[in-house]
Length: 64
Length: 160
Image 1 (cartoon, helix red, strand yellow):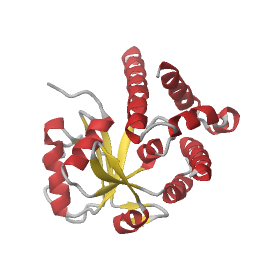
Image 2 (cartoon, each protein chain N blue to C red):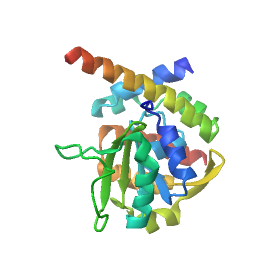
Image 3 (tube, rainbow over the protein chains, first blue to last red):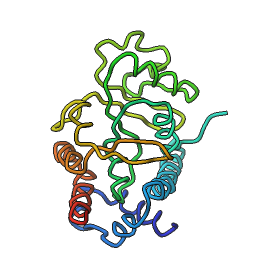
């Protein structure tokens, strides 16, 4: 789960136009997600979403 | 007490309260296996007053406010009438919810629902935009994160 979270986050941060080209598809992670049930996919995403929200909140506090 | 952001809970609430909608956008992508984090829940539904009143009622405990416009008006107070409303962009304690009456390059709720995939979520019936329609709409938007989701969806379609 932790690895999945960090990959979710890494992808979120690098999804620039160039990033898509350079970063490419993480077929291993995609395959791993496909092996999960729908509810499990939502739970994994929620863990990553919380992390992203925490990072954004910390950035916001840092700027204020 | 203010609820923590939880898009899954937001989705569960809408499904549980029999609101007729199709899950679209990045959240639909997640259900297809996408690895790209989305910060909001996007749904497509018929923007008719009775359905929207029900949404308002369901969201009431979660302090829904309009995200667009300077005043951050409460969704519990505005609009007074849902006549003519086409889209709603809301923030709630559970997270961001975008409600669209129509999707670019795909069409209105009926057209989206006609091709939608029927699934069971939280033990209840739900609809997800078809992967083909999701690709079409994301191509039309063409943002960097959309390109990545499109590539993933095309990969997924090859495996279905």
